[in-house]
Length: 300
Image 1 (cartoon, one colour):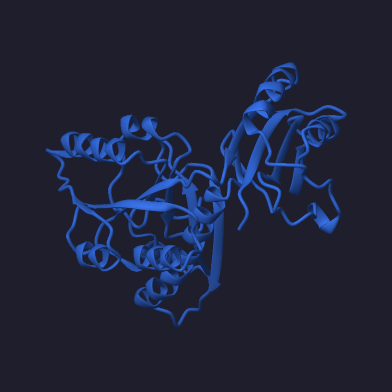
Image 2 (cartoon, rainbow, N blue to C red):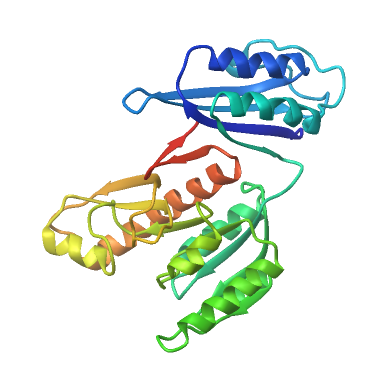
């Protein structure tokens, strides 16, 4: 895969925004690989994602397969930043510019349930997740052998009601030492404190084993069975101070019937959990997500 850059923008909507951004990229010789935008008409907001090649070996096609201007040489990302910043300020843009030349560093957290962890590590090993995983953190030792199999350092941090503050302090120390960009809670069964979450705003992804906002908190499969629902689901979302209330990234569901017992719901739900968590992590790594309010825009 050729190196590429991704620009994410959100700002008040107005005419000409797409032309302003794409025109500036054209002036700097960008070979646009993909572009997408969205308007929230109710709130009057505009969202955009643009990806372009950073070297002269890009594929030469833009969004929708249209031919784009060929690049005369490697794209000067710093020069583009210098001219884009004043325009962004003029238009009231919040923006984030990243490149694939820097692999995100991801820490995986889990407790005793290993199905999501095993799935993520397999996808990582096969190259589906474009990142580095320098550490696995757990309050149980069940995952230690799995971490060893994949050659990833394992950090055991015991958590009790009496030691929770100290445990989070140790976890944050590990994350800082490893220069972590994203924390993934792969069925980590501890509630993170607001102080912990504040260190990684919109950079902690959790998977919850229900179709939120239904059945928040613990034992959602038991609650779903008791309620007699006909669909169960799983949800991946960013973590905020409020339990199971962060911006939703992805969800999926499975149909069940009165014949299914709690154990059946748990078994079927695990497949959903793997799917929605891996999608959320991949989209975050690909810089496809913008948060606003308590919602997300997930670009194609």
